[in-house]
Amino acid sequence: MKERMSDLYDKSEVGGIFVHAHQAHEVSDIMAGIYGDGIIALPNAYQPQLIDRIRASIDSLFAKARETPDGALPRGPHRYYVEVAPESIDGFTEIASHPWFLAVCDAVLGPSWSIVEVGFDIPFPGATLQPWHRDFAAPDATIEGRQINSLAFNLTTVDTTPDMGPFEIAPGTQWDMIPECPRGMFPDPARWPRYEARKVAKLAQKGSISARSALTVHRGTANVSDTARPVLVIGVDGPSAHNSAHHDLQMTQAFVEALPPVLAHRFTGRIVEQISGVRQNHVIEGLLAPASSGY
Image (cartoon, rainbow, N blue to C red; front, side):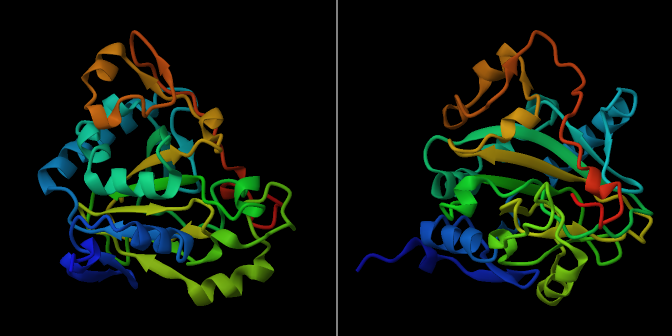
């Protein structure tokens, strides 16, 4: 009898959620994780040398972004988000062509998915606890059709420790209705005890990658260490999602022509002669304002 692919791999526990320790691509496991907890992860997906190259790119790009109007968006005290061109990240193609990355996109979003966002989030020492939130309001596809039509991939560039402000997520909350906030992103504090009871801190280690629904309620915690925690972010849309409207993905023709076949036609953006600093549109005001501000 033929073995299931998922039977061929050991499993390990990351932040309380079980994931395959190797390149398992069982569709049922992927769907169960994204539609259940709202997040899955693959530890040891990439070699440390590749992550070091990505970290060097992030450090250089952040310095340039600080010199560009609206180039580095604050996401709270001592915390910034920067959107960049994919070719500006050394090793990006290796990240996005990983078999697990491709399998997750295919399983959840179907065959016609597109990369619409590339950026990085940096909680520096002194970053404070964020309010519980979503990255955007739940679309009709989720509210009415119970469909997850976009994904956010996160890749840490450091070994996360509890004092570095780890990402916390409340599993299963991608399906929550939060009608009290007009923009559909920041639940009323009266709901927070439920998230506190469900929360899982993600102590992601260098070389691991996660995929989640950005609708799953989450927050960044306080970084009380003396170390920054840069995280690469890749946003992917299915055909019914429209998150590309919030981003300005730029690519040169040379980058497009050098893409491996598995990534050809997988980007929603514009072709430019020269990459310029991204003037970002996806401001999340609720991370800058009091949590009860109605976002």
